[in-house]
Image (cartoon, rainbow, N blue to C red; front, side, top):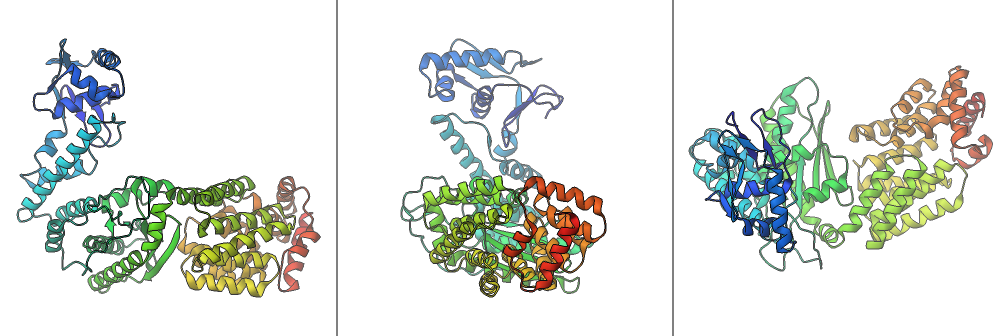
Length: 606
């Protein structure tokens, strides 16, 4: 910004800014004209050319009329030096307007110039505008490639001159995100890093999965190859009072990113992008927008750095590990942890090619499945039924999609719980879908989990525990499996063990679904910890499903008024609920649990 006139921002959000820093109201197609003229050498273009570029889908007369209208709407944009746009009968010219283009058209030179250019470039030239199809969109793509080439040349030129190695590493990783096979940048990254990158095997071509039209972020050069998986390493959020430990954990993630950049079997999302998407909650949108196949999710706690690799298309945890970090020997720990994680991620991604190809062949099925998961995070019947619709939609696209079959099973179990009518048909449907999921993918821990849950409510506690134990062996750090295993332990008259397992599940999934807290409340109730039971329910977003156990807890604590309030709420949600009938349906291994629950419910007035 020069302090007078107007400034055109072309990287990131396209907008015109006045001398006071305020965004000026301007038609988007007018902004696109400004950008085109700002980039052109003459700063001018014929009316005919602009009309054809900006309105290619319109007839010539209509396009000319649209251009006249746009210029008229921008007539108020003037400075002491003249209007922003001036027009004759045949030509349109750019007036006194500055832009951010100068910073990227000359990235070479000083380190500060390069830093500014990198900051602009990673925001992407005209990132969010609705580009006219055809020649204008092609021109924008060409300019993006041109800017990338300039930045790459400036990076190579600055390797020996720039003192800030961090900015060189950042630029290298961003460029490798676009072109993982750029050997010159890989070599540069290796030279400016502390040591050699990971040893890599010769690149292997992936087999094509069939027709796949979705645009992917990594281009491939051969017709018999498909895009490699993209991996995002999400850095941990700040934790605790020791900034050094968090700094080391963040540095570990950067080390891993640098190492994985050398691999041909995957594309790695640059740290800047990973930081911006770390807190995304909608996995389907996350996957579609950024083309990320795997996410390495990292959390710091007083027990160290916890990492889990998630295959996003199915939301499946394929690897997890916890690494202790102490103030003693931080550098050695950092190197060992980075190497171990990088090797594990490499192995899981390269051995998961079949799953990646399956996702590429059926993206709509996976997006619908993730939509169903989002609805399942709630415990209300409307959410359960919306989830079921999404899972059915996924199965229309791919009838043997094991995660969607498992999701269908979950919806029937949840409906059985929420309606409390002992409907055996719901449990039978749940078991059928869970068995089909196992038949489709025997290694899917979620499917074994659903069988375990069904068997719990069918009263077969031994088979339930066996299925859940198998699920936990398949995915020992899968929080949902730990929760279900714990829930069965509550019914198996082992509430203390259940609560310990639930605390582990909550540590792995701090933003846990309400079901975790509901189960923890149940375990606390049977341990006689009524206040803790109420406390867990208070942490639920939707407390309605737990009104019965809260009413029982208040009654056991002697507060009949609060017990009555929750009983009335529970009765309003399910007026046909009958204590004795429900207790004949809910399986408990030992009679004392039924007696304790009946006592609390009766005292509450049920």
